[in-house]
Image (cartoon, rainbow, N blue to C red):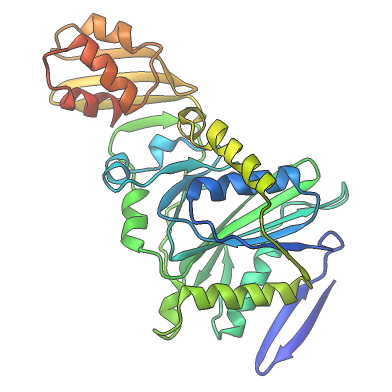
Length: 338
């Protein structure tokens, strides 16, 4: 069932859901990406109410649950620019966050009769709000929103028991050059069955608004629109207990290499540098098979030491130091770990 109302020449379509009742809005001033990603999981699993949140993060790359991080990010760029990589609990592709991007999260409880994941339904509020600004947007593909053919919103979802978390990005004035560079993977050959990001032409909403319109104004207006859209009357902030639970989740999961990198599906990593080629078999982030071809001293010892080591630059460096204590390991590091 839906209801429609007119605002001047703009028609806004509302959907009415039996599940989205007594929704609360949680104020989210935090910009730490680890906190923000962990907060979503915490609210999904520990709150009983339906919840709506708007939030922004400092520069970060957020990979989908079933992706191979190495196949999605430019490690050199993110290391040089101190951009963290964080795996989220929802599927889908890799996205870039910065303070020019606004994220929205909608968590609701359904019943056995309902289809919990419905991207058309959950992106409708975004389209409706943009209509009030005179901007026409379209649903594209499986879970994207675009304006004049340029994607500005990618969406994903995660189901926990009878609750669903739907969330999405809204590119307002994101630094698109950083978005492109951070998510452009290096040239090594990685073979896996992980979910691959679908590259798309992206654009900012700010391109369609006056120069004076800021993301703070956009966020405030969107918030007020959503409060009315969902008839929300209760606005909360996280309690000290909530903060404690979220930080525990950060420490135990979201800042751990095992989650952000090691959780990747099994893969084969192949690379060649200066006539030396390598093939690594990796499972749960740990190297379990090594093949090296080309002229290289202590090759057997290197292969032996690599097996059982995490496929991560820091761990590879330690192995190289033990095998080649007097040699600059930069070239071999590039060969073995991007």
